[in-house]
Length: 216
Image (cartoon, rainbow, N blue to C red; front, side, top):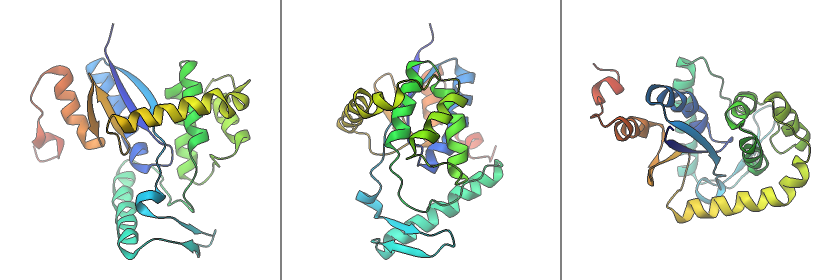
């Protein structure tokens, strides 16, 4: 039986989106099983919040100049990587409440379809084609992923919400603060860049840092 690499993600995180395929590649190379779990970020608590309209005009804003510099650089860097990989990542127009999508990940996971659900929710969200706060749209995504959505709405408002909240509290208590985060044999790792170290932990070989950064 293969061992499990637990992967924490949030649909509203472009960093998590960029990490999905490299994480899957690591699993294929090492034979580990991936267990996708949600960790819903509270972005306003550390980066403030803002909202823009369809024309790019600022509607509301409580960010400091420092926070805006961080946000603008982050998206510039994200797009560099996305462009190399043929991915579309458009800046969001507001800070989304992604908890419903996170609960849907848990629902899909219970049916063994979490991986498939990621494929139908991430890409349209980052093209601005998906409202992740809309239960009807989330139900459609579940169906497209081969997940039975019957009963999901009630579950999301009750047991699923409680499971989501408890999972997030447990992750924070374990030291988690962002996504993508990984847990391998009780060791916590943060960020896509940590996949090289995780691979070393799994296969027991020293990481090839030169090859990892493309200079070998």
